[in-house]
Amino acid sequence: MTLYSSSEYRTRRRELSPKVQQVREEYAVLAQQAVFRAYPSMPNLGVEICILDAGDMLELFWRILDIGGEAPGGWHQVHDLTLQFERGSDSKKISVGLAGHVAGFYAWYRMRGGMVSILPNSHYFNLESGEWSIFLEGKLQDAKALCLFADAFGDLFHYSHILRHHSKVRSALMEEHLAAMEDPAPLQPFRLFAGTLKLQGDRTTPIRDRQANRLHQVSVHFSDVKNVPVPRVTPPAATPLDPVHFFRDRMYYLHHQSRDYQFCPYGTVNHWNHEPSFDQGHYYVNERTAYFHIEALTPLYRCTGDADVYRSARKWYEWIVRNIWPAPGGGVALACGDRTVYGSSLHNGGLSDAVCTFAEIDGEARWVEPLRQGLLQWPMHPVIPRPLMDQDAWGNEEMNTTGTYNMCTHFAVACWRAGEWLHDDALKAKAEKILFGYTFPGENNGVWPYRPGNYPAPHYDMYLKWQLARLLASRSPRWREDPSFVSLMKKAMDATLREYARERDGALFFLDWTHDKNVTHPGNSARQAAAQLEALACLTAYVDPGYCEPLEKTLRGLYGQLALPEVDRCWHGCWFHVHGNLLSLALHGLHVEGNSPSEMRIVRPGRIS
Image 1 (cartoon, rainbow, N blue to C red):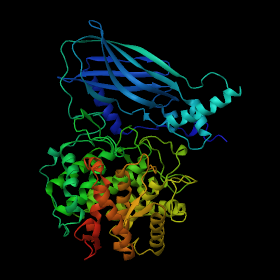
Image 2 (cartoon, rainbow, N blue to C red):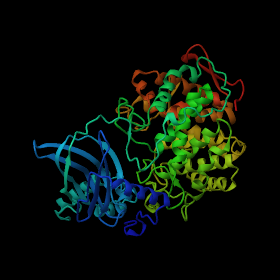
Image 3 (cartoon, rainbow, N blue to C red):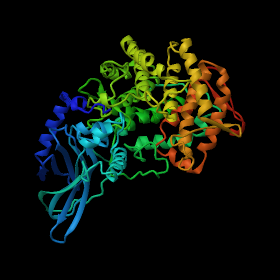
Image 4 (tube, rainbow, N blue to C red):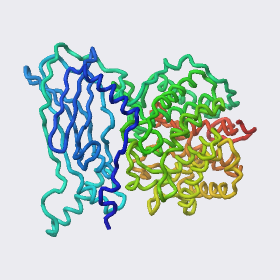
């Protein structure tokens, strides 16, 4: 049976916020200074190219005006969109890549990849003097047939996955003469002449520390916060084996990067094997870059009292509150048309949860206030007790996106924590509606699938349990004194220890997200273990001291993994959660004693608020 085959539920934008209109007007004024501007187009594709003289380099703005329908609609997608500069005097060619894969909003619900931005994208580039002919190149594809094919699977998405399945089915049918030879979604290469640019002098200064898509956000640097007052904290006493001492140098790698740079040098949070790159010409900031730093730096400040660490965290907090954009469907978003990897309700959940953690520094609710309306107004599903999962930070495609338990739960936890800080009963009620109506009923023998149905995903299951444990760690006794919730948490952790943990030499190791020993990396496994470490710490400190034994074994396994040479690069900029997970021990009143990791033991001299 084909599901959602009409355009009724396709992603669509109903209105734009005044902030978007304002920035568009600012761009219109900026574009009047262009040294080159063109609108190359063909049927089903229209693009604007605008080049500004930035003094010692050039700045390029570009945006898709049409892709198979009035922007941002359309069933088409464009691949490998590139500007080609060709100099007639010596036939020299320069390529400037714009985008690898951008889908129109009617197609995006299946194709994913990039999405049509609501504001022009921009970056800087170099070009020598001369007379340059400019061409726009790429491949256009009508993806409607692939979208309808994917609809038949119920929840098949991502262009590469759809194409693989479609090609396999089509080949089999062609062999039986049940399908025509014509490709229903062919790639159409194009090369459009955009015009000629006469550049009098070279613009070849090295590009360093330049924000891409600068219309989308206001930059915040460490210099902007280096003199802000620092609230005083009383760091908990620490033993030599406590993470704050044992991994202090490694934890400070991230602090120094966070202070000096505006990006994550990995460009992602999963590719542990990549060497860090600190010489990026352009940097990108999205919700992950901003709030992941806060998650790591806030506990580090509470455990050290280092004023510079606080200011590093404050820089990212300021980036968030200065760059909150109203979303047309309600709520807020940090991205402005950029696709968010995990979906915008998860990003709002994680971001808000991190800001609540930041508020714990001095116990002031005012830090959380900027998020109140966005969380309250974030739209709920009309029938199912979960938030809408638009996943693109601006559209309304939730009918085609199944609500993942992990995503919905983090949003609910954020609502509850924010409601607790702000004494907002409406936020708490919204959170509990999701938790009791959607998350908790999805549990089966202590395990949650990725989404409703038979979709096992151990790493998402473990993430969800870490999120629920944050309720145990909240200021209110609401969750610790709820027998049904405590029973559920114990059942869930017992399932984790049973299903995903493996004991070796008195230490516990956890399945990583690949679940394949041939392609796994110890950094992945350690990442999973760190999240469960914090969940076990919450259970040990607030529910049942009997979880202290698996907590010790988990920490022992972690100390072994985190000391491996191949894991060292993970500390240099991409390991955000792990810092907070490790430091949570002391913040929950748990300390590590012993003379070496092999003989460590967890002690609890007293809870530390």
